[in-house]
Length: 455
Image 1 (cartoon, rainbow, N blue to C red):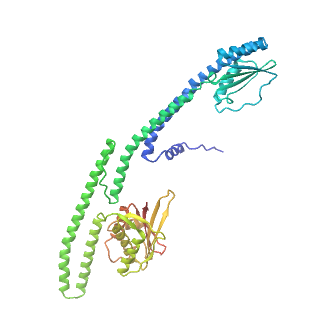
Image 2: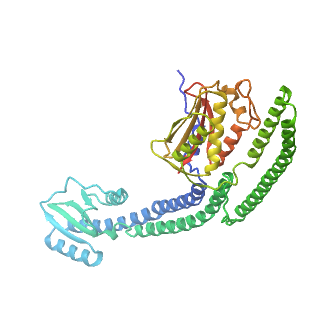
Image 3: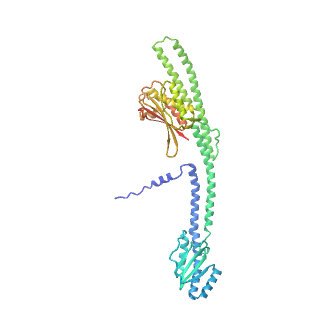
């Protein structure tokens, strides 16, 4: 049986998923992580090389004094000797030594969270002292309790903590932590200022993509960010100039074509009325309709102003307009109304195109709406336009969204149009930061799913 080892490729994937996704998070990680690692390395080196060495030397010095006191008493175990040792230890060594006759060493010791302190003191006592001992470094805040078993009792030594350990190490840690905090704060301020410039550029680009204008946007920040902002402004000006030229050109073409079309209509009205004349009238009407569709497609909805729009109010207006055109729409508004910041005329045109497209190919069209709450707490508004027509095959739905595309094979009732209805609706929805998705309808035909983000 072969053992399967975990693939090494999993580690890069785990690291990639773990690192921050935003530029702000990654830039902060690039600055803060090296500082944190450096501070950790310096602190570890200090404790491992300096602090433990100093603590070991202090412990050895303290234990040497204790060994002197024990040896002196055991050489002459008399009360007078103990009194002299205690006096000398208090005066020269800052040790409080008391002899406790007929006492034994405690059998328990309270645990110390700083095990390195106990380890260094225990190591020094074991190396220099032959008698049984016991010590406690946690009972008193500023002292160490050490007891040594001697003949007839216990010699108890109370020593200042600074004689056994380097007690100022926490100051070093505070200095290191304070320096890390100050450096991190400075890094956050500088990084935040640079990232804000990129965020402003992103918001300006997103607003322009939705047909909005941000007159207050100005390039600032690092040289590279300012260069990108200037390039964006130049691109924005070129696109706006191109749109204006295209709209002006098609408006001129439309105006020029309408004049001869009007003359043709007058001549046909005055000509003898027969089947050929009726066919020519129909051709002229179709040409006028096509010109209007081309012009609407070129203009888009860029001139429409953005405002707060009630979705239920929008659907009610749509229903009234559809009824005036002679159709009956099945409407299911939201149970709780939602307000969007949008261009009302643009959304109205998109919905009208989709609904009329449904009536061209089906007998029943239904419009409904709902709000979806996703896992990341974002809300998406869905407006469904369903019909009971022949629908569109899944492999042709992308083609149906393209401009001037007419799927007569799939929508064989299509007797009027130039293939711009879905394309115009898609452009309008995208201009609002949403998307238009075609799917199978519960009524059996085509479902147009308008998805718009809700703030």
